[in-house]
Amino acid sequence: MPTQTRDAAQDAATAPPRPPRRVGFKQRLGRWDVKFSPYLYISPFFILFLIVGLFPIAYTAYVSMHSWNLLFGKGEFVGFQNYTDVFAQPHFWTSLRNTLSIFVLSSVPQVIIALVLAAFLDQNLRSKTFWRMGVLLPYVVAPVAVGMIFGRLFADKSGLINAGLEAIGLPAVQWHVNVLASHVAIASMVDFRWTGYTTLICLAAMQAVPRELYEAAIIDGAGRMRQFFSITIPQIRATIIFVVITSTIGGLQIFDEPRVYDATGTGGASKQWLTTTLFLYDVGWGNQHNLGRAAAIAWLLFLIIVVIGFVNFAATRRIATGGSDLPSRRTRRSAERAAAKRRAS
Image 1 (cartoon, rainbow, N blue to C red):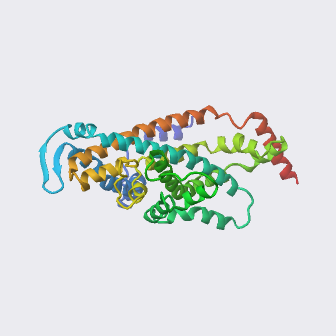
Image 2 (cartoon, one colour):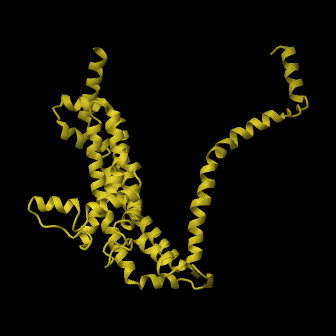
């Protein structure tokens, strides 16, 4: 090693350390911006959820532990007495049965019809925007208007549905007397309003499916039905899970349709279509004026929705992961050949 190089190395080793470079205010501000700006961007949602979501849930639990009257306000602490009082009321179990029945009768057909309509709208149709907006129109109609219209359609004596049944030789149905018939009528209102919204969600997912898969299926000789069940459904299973969960949450909270199904809005003379939310309204602001008991019903309904939602999520997720190997290896090879042929042409 040359002498000058060795002396420079020794001087560098024995030199005192340089003082740390001072960071200016703009540099510190830039670092803070990088660290904290993402949290600031998402904070409005969490603040809004804390105010209008989490706080009402916690406060409802607090109210459910007290004797709270609509006219006289807060009373003494009663613990779980409101919950036991709710369990002792027969109308609560009737409302729970009606809610589950209407939920099943509305959610299952809604998802099936939405998938079929989305598959038709995904084809090469003329005036696509017109048909898509037409499917969505019932969603923007006020639920009270829908309930009043369907209440007249399903009228027992002068309804259009019974008139059509009698015209083809079938007996009239007591839509406001029979339990199952009233549930079918209310479920049809729910499907009329929400099927279009669900259809557009499924349609958006179908349009994201690679077209090469369909071209490969056509090369393999698959028909429309085979393409739908072997390509479309497996590719949009995540969207189907989302639709099932949202329809579950909405179906168990149904209120508007049974409320306006008849003039009284009390769920029928024998509580044939009394839902849990309608029973909650009657307990809190109707005949009983007991807000503590109504809060207990709200919390019970919340827990039921959470449990059924998790069950639906687990079941649909298991179905989705069971078909994760689709499309098959043969279909992928055919898709690659179709893409290569299209690029060559």
